[in-house]
Length: 115
Image (cartoon, rainbow, N blue to C red; front, side, top):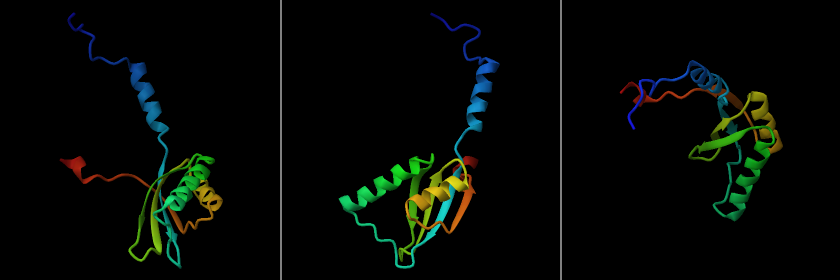
């Protein structure tokens, strides 16, 4: 069975659906937090449970915790979140009893894009 002349062509309606889907990509945010006494999250089942509870409470507002970076002194965290808007990110922080000093919408800048 050979390829037809139309193989590899895309219906314009199909392309429009892809463009529409791209418009609904969840915004990404960096959340800066300060823990004056330091962040103390044990590498135990208790720590794992704490993280799971945060993930569950975040989901209530359509927020996803992607990852976090912790300063060497454990007093600052920089957390990557996906969510509908800053208000949803802040509400998730409040539900979890976490500070949210700054919430900044970000985009990816990949140095390998240019190669």
